[in-house]
Length: 232
Image (cartoon, rainbow, N blue to C red; front, side, top):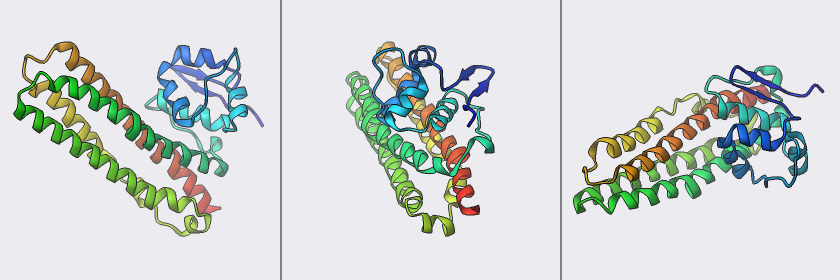
């Protein structure tokens, strides 16, 4: 089988690329290693070697990297195989854990530092708003786990299942994340140090962009793979 390569004006990824070169060029991809629980290598090994070592399909790994790095990159039909489906579901589940166990608590810790410089009313309002946002995301993730991922776990159920939920845009998540950024940017009192505010915004925008990639993975990777299985 011909090795899968991803060509893009801004990136060139291939199985024989060294892992250090990949991370050195694109540090944001470290989160993929964290989600897949792939330990960073000792020595100068390639992407293909580390995927073989950890039992993860190299073609799928490269697609995940490509979609995280480029907003416009979409895998074509020739790159997708039905064997990738469970790997994609595992990655999306791992992303849910990554958000709830790492990114959201990380943002919350920065929010607490910001709130130290706010009056009691602002503290209560902002904390309540963020907690509502976290609960909203948790509910959304639970719905995906129950109505999509758990169904895919059963191949017989998958064939006849309705996955129209995958077609729905995630604009509500994007809007709520932007609302938090707007509050930090516009509504905090001036005595909040600029450094704290900028750090908080930086993490919020990182979360927003990662959630957008998550939505793209569901729409342009998971949905075509499910359709392929149903047609087969």
